Amino acid sequence: MKSKKHEGLLRYLKWLYPNLNVKRWFLLAVFGIFLFATGFSVMNDGVAIGYAELQLRELIYRVTGSTQHIAIPTGAVISVLGIAAIIIGFKRMLYSIISSVLPDNEGRIVDVIYTRNHLLRGPKIVVVGGGTGLSSLLRGLKQYTCNLTAIVTVSDDGGSSGKLRDELGIQPPGDVRNCLVALADTEDIMETLFSYRFEGGALKGHSLGNLLLAGLTDTFGDFQKGIEQVSKVFAIRGKVFPSTLDQVVLIADLEDGKRVEGETSVRVTEGKIHRVYLEPSDCQPVPEALQALEEADLIVLGPGSLYTSVLPNLLVVGLREKIREVKAPCVYVCNVMTEKGETDGYRVSDHLKAVLDHCGPGFVDAVLATKGKINEPLLKRYIAEEAVPVITDPKEVEQMGAKYYEANLVQAGNVVRHDPDRLAKELIRLLFRLKPMGERIALVDSYLLTRKLGKDS
Image 1 (cartoon, rainbow, N blue to C red):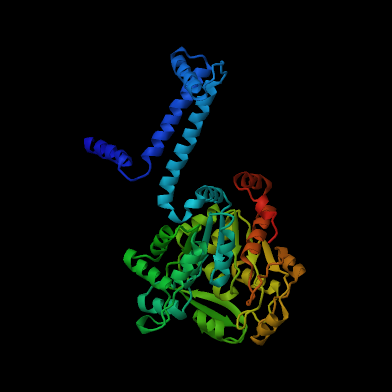
Image 2: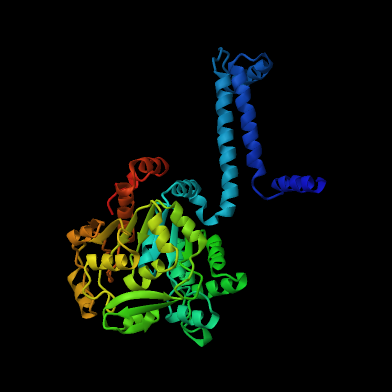
């Protein structure tokens, strides 16, 4: 018992170590409290403080040389000086502490604290998918809430991820890596670090982020624990979970009767997909992912490749059932363009039908599609690659039991994809439309979205 008390005392005494730049400001704040108390006593005609007041008047007389009676609210002056000393002392003390922890944000400490606390009160949103669509969505949503959970497909068998999967027996880290980058506070630095790709030697083709996740998985013996360690180091705004920790293979049955194995083969094999499966079929989800779905205010499917990014997550035993069971509305975000080999000629309703065929009727509450225009040169380039804008058909979607919404979500650039901020804003708006009134009031009370959503992109 004595040793614990001794350790506790030593811990507090560390604040007295030299060069911490804390003691002086703490003492200034204490002196300010003393001044404030003194001034308050003077204002209340404190007899014990009368002498101090007389000395102050005499000092003013000596400085000014005036023999006239100087009517000065001495108590108020002393109190104001005390308040100033308290504010300066505590402010500088906090800056000294926080700037040591967040050196890059020293000039905007108040903004950082406010933003983080503000985002922590945001709605709980779970996004399900993979590929660039998922990371793009997370990049937009993190501006509105820190309560984000990404459930990521792990059926990738190509590129660096596929090699690490085959050689080390770990889950493919590529999509997980992209989600971690998108959710990072220091996204530019993490993007540069994690996306660095070796161009020669035994590591040719591997990205540094993939290798780091592989190394942490080997160190901690678990892919999810490796993700958690990265999240701690890079201050991730949210959580990332693989849809399963089992080694799975994506299988597709085509309408012509052919069966294709492996995500890469599914992407490149010509022919209309009838149904997709996972092997083994009894793969289990991460328990924390199920818990996130249980607590969610909104569940988002996509955007991303329908058969190779979105549906593989919903084939994991328990995930599909949990999404159907919880009260949170489920929104499917339809891709802007069709994908050769996967969704050739698909309309919005065809995308929804594929989801319902695999998950059952009533699984999706709402569908969000885009109505943005694509510039002519870019559109011609995509048509040459056998990809065209997805045709919207609101009536067919609503006949399947889902509400239909659309907005201009196309990002300006040299590729056709969703604009992260526009998509995030539209999903937040949908959350307020789809949540029951009683729950909506609780959200409004905890998260001040009105001002943000009122700004046009």
